[in-house]
Length: 171
Image 1: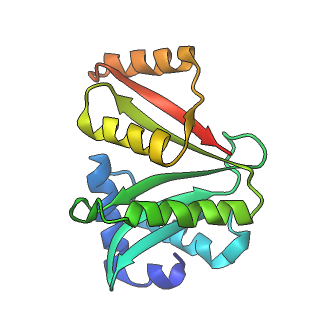
Image 2: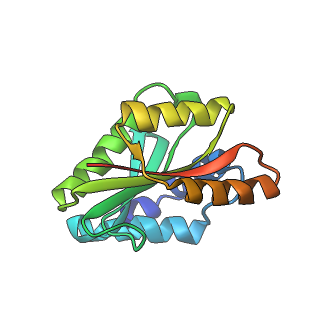
């Protein structure tokens, strides 16, 4: 996305609706969406951009990709905040967003890609994500056992039993 997209209030509102609904809380604000879209003006020089998926004129999903976030090693890009409108899931939009993001990262010289996500044993939606990320997408969990236990403990204390955080990478 670019600031041209940010000038269209319906797109900004749809990004907010899709992302904040998926997260179940206000993950993004309008100024944050505008800023992320404006970052795309730098083209291939942009460190972080917001990818968008459309079905015709309708925004159905988005994903962020970052060339060099501070929490990954050198030459390791990152994508995250992958969201597709629930009514459009299972139609290939997430796959298209991931492919676009990973192509951008590879073209910029990233040799690896990292993602992170919350996982809850027995929860069908996160079990499905784990299968997709670590199966179909080819990611391997690199979280240490201690890291998963500590984050899992914090999540349990917050009322989320069997939950943990998975950090994954692929070449």
